[in-house]
Image 1 (cartoon, rainbow, N blue to C red):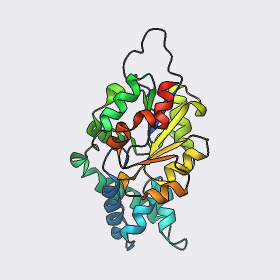
Image 2 (cartoon, one colour):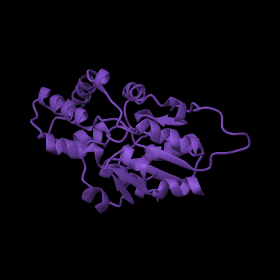
Image 3 (cartoon, rainbow, N blue to C red):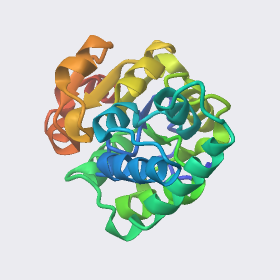
Length: 237
């Protein structure tokens, strides 16, 4: 887990509240890249899984995604080959990764307003490094998690627990920003309100159905409405 500071806090001020951010599909436009990478990985092992089904599972951890999409009767020895193939294909897209409009500014506004900022990602550590490079916002990030920091992936809340521990904030003082139903479900298990973004390809209706407190099109729209959002309440508090 990366516990690096995003810069010195103002004298005497302890960051007691935090915003946790998913990364893939939330801050970085990568949800459909993952869909394509999984599709190719499945095909390499002889499984023809429709992209629409894959996309609905993006946001889970890799092992859980594979288990959800493939039949129970399969030879499970193939799972590791699929995971490896996905990693290899996704890695070829690292140079193409792009942050969503407003993503860096959103992190900056949160941290400069006095909140701790953590990336609550279940990406592999090497993928997370590529995502952070595309985001170019390390000055505003207090901590970041990777798949190494959780035994169970979303919708289990392990990654969020790890992120909260990294910044020393209780769940009652946090807001989570994500793009998938799995993000909302994970946060709900800790009683953390989720601000959901549709830029990862999941509809507002689906996100609200699983409990999203607010829904915006992407980081820029959230930033433009920050004062009236759940993050705004943390900043005002």
